[in-house]
Length: 168
Image 1 (cartoon, rainbow, N blue to C red):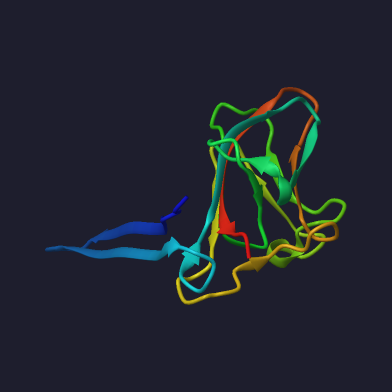
Image 2 (cartoon, rainbow, N blue to C red):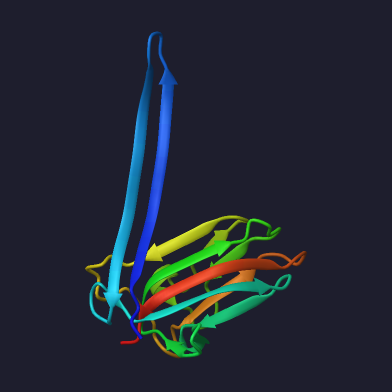
């Protein structure tokens, strides 16, 4: 089945300063984007997974990027390379969502001990450029686990996740 993806991150900032006779403004609009066609080469991806997930208080989960995730069509997703990862912590969360580290960590993005902490309402996005044929490599059995942790024991957390990548 074909997979066509568009990734983007945008920053829009307007700074102003009132002067004696005028107001000076500094508008900034910056967008980073990549478009991927269906396939496994540079500028392509052929796998997609997305879900809203909930972790109980103090719970963790290991998202195995090699042969465990099931897409919306019921097909098992095995990633050899990830081209895009998007995670968003629900604004209603009380605790943080921590992503990364763990046993057999998927280290090509955050190294083996790196983590990203998403406070309630925060999001992160990582994607390979359209000219990048490698993306973020997944090594089955030894480097394929994306760990997600609820940072505290008081309440559950909910987060959205989108993963796009290649089977070869």
